[in-house]
Length: 182
Image (tube, rainbow, N blue to C red; front, side, top):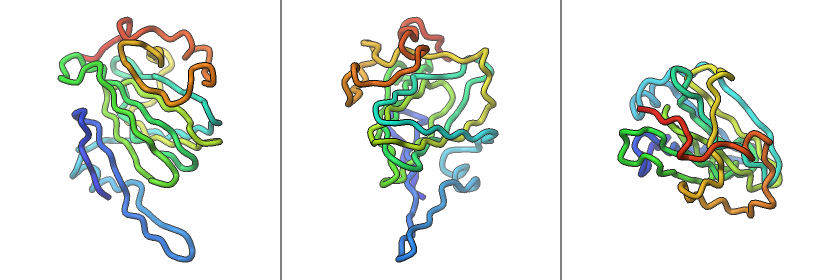
């Protein structure tokens, strides 16, 4: 696998070495020792999967306080625009975001450390999205930021009126109202 530090410290792009032949393909999606050598030791304790259709936007979500989570995200089928927003107050990229297409075709993964809000928009007819986290989900610590917050300037490639959002995501607080990480 090839590990590339993105322009936001702590966020890594991971691209697997894909072995293809007449039967299909094979690749390692995760190897603990190699991950630790490049990014650091992370103890993933839960893995989640979500299936969504075109235009579904999930996010921008995060877990507050002691329940914050680092994530290793990837797409199994389809394509998404994946977005991570830096909520670390002492970071030189506080309030900045990174967005990247993750797809079945490119097999890219993104590692997002603790201290970020995360979301994704389904660009294909449907997508299956998978992610590992290093802390168990705690509903009492769940938080979100409005996907369309003007301060964040995220360029979602589908018009707002075509997005499919949960009620929670439609009324999420603004970036200025978010709980940041120190």
